[in-house]
Image (cartoon, rainbow, N blue to C red):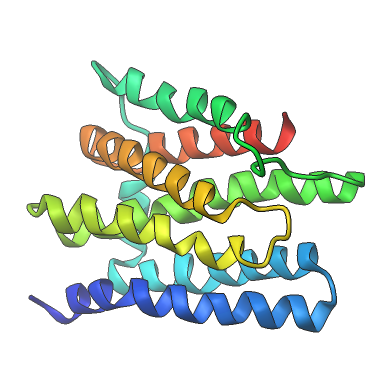
Length: 203
């Protein structure tokens, strides 16, 4: 196992622990659960979802992973599952987003695109690139870590059903991993994640 693979395996528990602290500190510093939550997400996107992939796989491989590829066969069904799932998921108590002002709605919309792009790059792209022949390390580990990571932002939101969020993320991550494997890239997982996120925040 090379050093980059070791870093990828050690990153999830460090990410979850540190980001939990970051979210708590930002909420405390801003005096607002929403503002602290949003700033925490931006911190996560910039540090863990951008800098870590750049360090571990490089810009050239990132460009190759996000290049649109043809979708065929059961890939169409995999693409629809997160979108339909997001609409159904909104029926779970505590999964709504309270939007009291236009600026909050706009920030929520930006999280749909931000999470769609950055999370798929990290949790699907990096692991499929570093562990191409290992299903447990390419798909199972990052899916579990992706689900557990949601505890950090969920813990600072008063209206969040944290366990529902984790279970939903595990289901989403499983489908997204299959979609990434089927297409050998993260373009379609990004699309599915972003559309599902928009449904979650706008409905």
